[in-house]
Structure formats: C-alpha cells, structure tokens
Amino acid sequence: MKALFLGLISIMILTSVYYINISETNETETGNNYLKSEICYYALQGIKSDYHYHLQLNITVDGERIVIPANIGFEKNENNETLFLHPIHTYDNSGRVHVETTKNATAELGFFFDIWGEDFSKNVILGNDADEQHAIEMTVNNQIVNTFERTLLEPYIFIEINYYSKN
Image (tube, rainbow, N blue to C red; front, side, top):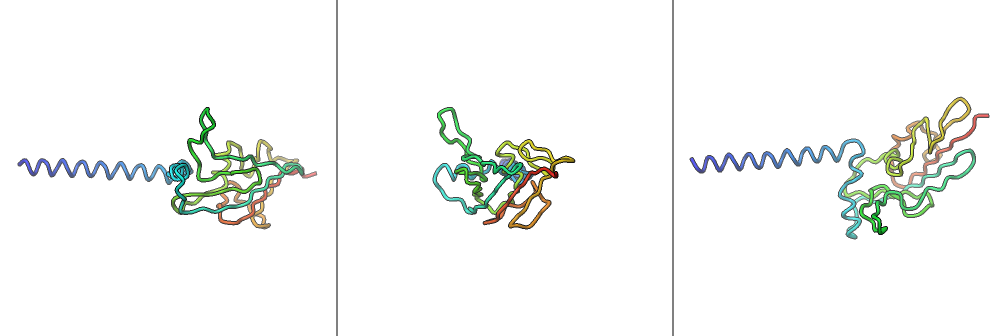
C-alpha cells in the first residue's frame, strides 16, 4: 500500500512539472513574448548565442534620415549597468540591427519597434501617420513590400522605410 501511495505521488509530481514546463514554453513562443528569452543570460555571461545575424534598417521621414539610436534593446539599472539584452538590439546608431537568439526563432520587424518603444505599421512610423497627404513605403532589398511590421527579419537584408508627402 505504501509503495502504491508513493508511486501515485511521484506520478502526480512528474505530471505537474511536465505541465508547468509546457505552459512556460507556450508563453515564451507565442507573439513576441520570446523577446525576453534566455538570450539575456547568455549575452550577459559572455556565452555566444546559437543564431546571430545582422540586417540594415534605414528610415527616412520627409527626406530626413532618422538616426536609429544606439543600445536599443539594452535594459539598464540606475547605475547604467546592463540588466537585460533583448535578442533584437542595436549597438550603435548606424541602423545595423542585431538578432541574437539561442534558438532559431522567427523575428518580425514589429518586434524591434516594440523593443524600441516606437509605433510602426502600414499607417504610422515614428508618430507620423499615413493619410490623404502622406504615405509610407517600405522596401526589402530594393523590392517594395506591404508586410510592414510583419516583415521577417533575415540575415543581411536591407530594409528601407520612407514616409513622404504625396504632393
């Protein structure tokens, strides 16, 4: 009887652990919740990520090139020490975007804007709305696309976003 009871308890514990792990995995891989993934620990401990690539992002608003700030994706404390590094980030203001993940995860351009804290869609870029007088055009490797925030980030692509007056 004692062995049966201990066996049932063991099965209950193992089942609980399994379901806890399943729910955590589903939470981190849906939407853009994976952005605060285990990469932060690897990056901060100096361990290399499994997937690391770059792309170029240029944004122009009414003919003016927008500087994409350095250190997007770095969360720092009051002493300016990095606490967390998002898998999608910048190191400088060149427009070069780094994607570093510990697994082959799908990243979209909208995730980068979420991390940056800026609006971006087919209707708005950095607070500039597309309307009767203004348009937003986006190209990937010089090809016009209409995927905007859903554009998949891939190695060595060149993304240009242009907000301009139709007049």
